[in-house]
Figure (tube, rainbow, N blue to C red):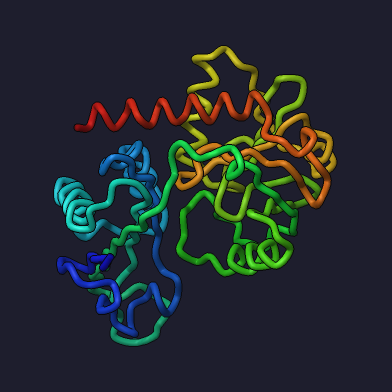
Length: 287
């Protein structure tokens, strides 16, 4: 199946889609991005992704190159022409082309917008695919982790180490406390209480994380919003991570230390089921 990408107003086969070598996203990672889940051809919780995108753009003094109404139309068209029923939609905005490789913003900024899709199963996964293994590594990222920057080299290097050690994700730590995953938010459960770091500049405010926390309130489940140590993670009753592409992913081992006898926890699976129901109901409203 040929994938069609969107690049600054044009739709091209992804192998033909191009940006300038002078694009500041390429030269400086001067841009921000979003990844949203898609089910039944509809973006899950799109409003939250757009709000976060706008916040990231504001934080780096960049503007969206098209109006929001047009952005929604581009998203919809890209999903339709790719016949995407289930998977993810990636989009990012950079500061565009500069006349030279100078660090300062170009005087006449012309931001660049690209989008493409990925076909993959994200809903109703079988149990054997809900057994993630995690390893911990130092957090070497910049201090503004609340901005969804396209500068992802520390995550790339960390996730490659995890891959080489047969792990699905890396949990990064700083001063002995877990910050978040390489591309996810980290949670543990102890005595039926969920524990995860408070939103601040040390972590990205995950859209799936936000939805899960709202579901916790509706279910009357306990949540302790605080950092947790690596040792606490090792001794957790259950553990999981969240993201737009994996929803709620159970963790069965951390640094080869087995969690919950190597099986997805009951509360974690309940939260995944609640989130899937939320996702399915939200897309029905969009149709």
